[in-house]
Every structure is written in C-alpha cells, then in structure tokens.
Length: 170
Image 1: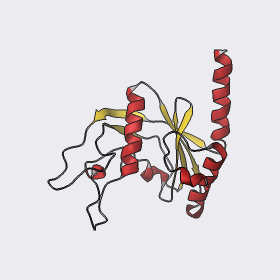
Image 2: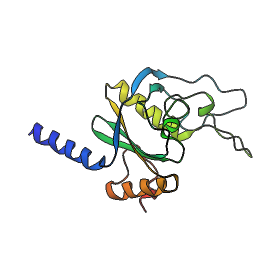
Image 3: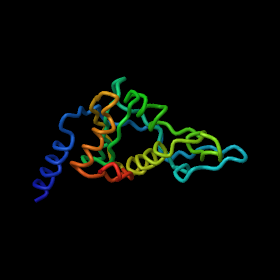
C-alpha cells in the first residue's frame, strides 16, 4: 500500500515537472531568524515578522522563466520571473530576507518591502525546521511569455499550496 502511494506521488511529481530541470536542493544557512527592529516611524507589512531562513539556492540560470518549489516531492509554489531566475531566487530574492524587505510601504510612496519574498521564505523556514527538504525546479522561458506559462501551469494543475493568487487560474 505504502509503495503504491509513493509511486502515485512520484508519478504526479513527474507530470507536474515535465519540461522543467531540477536545479537541486536548497541548503540551509540559518533557520528561525528574526529581522531587526524597523526604523522609528516605519511599520512592517503583514508577512514581515518572520521567522525567516537564510538559504543557499542551487545554481540557476541567468535567464527568465518559471520555477517550482518542491517540498518532499510535492509542488507547493509556482512562480515566474522576467528577471534572471538566479536573481529572483538568490540573495536579493527569496534566499535572504533583510529588514528592508519586511517594511510596509509608506503612504504616498513606492518604497516598501517584498511581501511575497517574506511569505515564501517564512513558509520555507517552517518546512525546513520540520526536517523537510526543498528542491527548486525551473524552465527557462522568453520574458514575454513567463506570466502566461505560469497561468497555463496553474490552469493545468491548480494553484499550489503556497500560491495565494488564484486569479491567475483564469
């Protein structure tokens, strides 16, 4: 029975990652990290409290594309970037959360942190703290089709557990 379930999980993963390359596993450089106090007069956005992880991402291409977060064989997040995958998932993206990333936008200004980076990093922190393993899959795409490719993946497989923007399904 357990072997059949494992086989079904593996088959589902292979279907969802068809056309993607597994970059490898995320390495942990730190867990359960909290950001420094915000500057006087600044507030945190809803996902800015942590705890966060400091992550070392596997080697990714310097090209745009789609990426999948795989936690113990289940795709939990799908995203796209028009920037290089290495930057989106690297130290200026999901891998490291700075105090600035946690700050809310000030009224009338365009400054503010990265809510998605904080939210996904905190979810990764929780999974890794539970002893789970995270792998990153990617598929290089042309800049102009990254968003439509993400929408196509979601319309085929549904929104992954960590995705919250289900409007992309339509």
